Length: 241
Image (cartoon, rainbow, N blue to C red; front, side, top):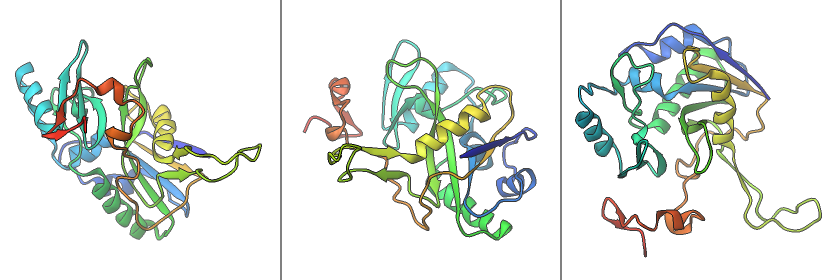
């Protein structure tokens, strides 16, 4: 697998994202996966808020979340079925504003994929929109996917034998987040100004359609459920039944 990140000018609110990609991406070939940071997708969509006070920032966090709890360092939230800090609202590299997450990353990825396929005359193409997250009991942040198009995000191993012939019962590989983590490591989190990357030779299965909830797991089935026992509900949905 090969990943290349691309340095670009600063993307501003309301700029055309498709034009930006056409201008700064190399010639795309069959089997490529284009990685786009969620921040420039959000800026293209005008998903920017003025957070003049901490109270205003907290209000946006709560409005953008399905569930929110104040912790020592940040707000722990659930948004779109994913645990993340502060509903993904980011003030870094935002020139004083609060950048919200894109409205619908799966839809945005699908639109970008169609535009890129037409521009570069390719058929097997993936698009991956990324953000960053922390993991429980782990220091530092890693890349994650918020939405993707053009390939299956999950690889199924259940029912296949391990190296000793024992059938695997639980194993699935999160392909989309694995690709996002690798790409974000190269793209950077600071002043690198590399919001775009292209992955080639990735071990993925390309597809015209994706199941947008294939990476989500119900809290009732999650092995980390005991960590959430103090959570009573998410927007009225009882979590203990």
